Length: 348
Image 1: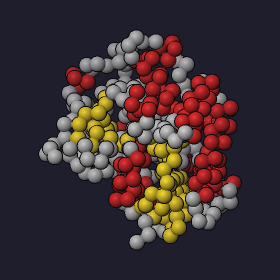
Image 2 (image 1 turned 180 degrees about the vertical axis):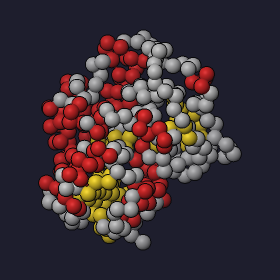
Image 3 (image 1 turned 135 degrees about the horizontal axis):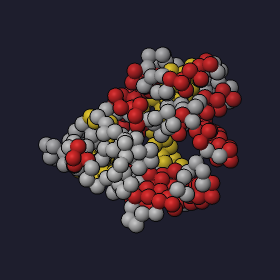
Image 4 (image 1 turned 90 degrees about the vertical axis):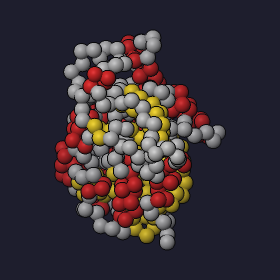
């Protein structure tokens, strides 16, 4: 094992940052933001790593930094190094970020489809529970759609907890009677240990700086028969392999700080007080569509007009096509780019 990881050249020298900047960004007013080095694997702490991928904020263009991912030679985990400093979160998550205004940004048909998918997903999760949930927490609750769903299933609003980093969103949920808090999981003291029957974290674990601390805190919150369901990108999927070097939509640069394989997400959970019950695969439609968008807009040859059609929130025909493709692949036993992991507190 090498004493130091073989990091790819990213984000240090401002002059070097501009080398390879995407076409059309020559006059961008996006800032160069502060970064924090992450020299060891966040899952297994190994320092044996190698360069994996690099790119820019192709989706939102919030910053002009060039970013790089590193692959752990020991546990297969992939992480962003360096990553944005915590002080820059309000820059890379602007008020227009889709999770804060989902219903306003997508077509009504897409909203209905998403609600149906959520109901199906939650129904599958509930089947893994020994008894109906009486308390619930959604980590990264966005506009609160899952809090509303669990309330409709019989959980009282006060026992529906939501964690989100946007104060405006939290204030709105509190006005509706939910127990929402503007805190990170690692810092939250508002939820009692052993009090939560169901915890969900859909496409959030990849955004945090210390996934082990997050899983450990959730394990403490779970009741004796509590269940933890998290969804996260899978770097061992077909679309991830096709867009690996730069353009995979699952990178969501620079907001995704940790990317998992089935092996590394299992190790993370088991090392922090959980045991995996099942891993299921969901449609990774947005990853497919963003991968195509990035390649058309920033690849060679560039086709920016065609890239504008690659919008998972607006192009319903394309959304339906890639969703059907992934669902068919799941039916025949293939692994998609969205893993739904069902875990419970380890019974010592």
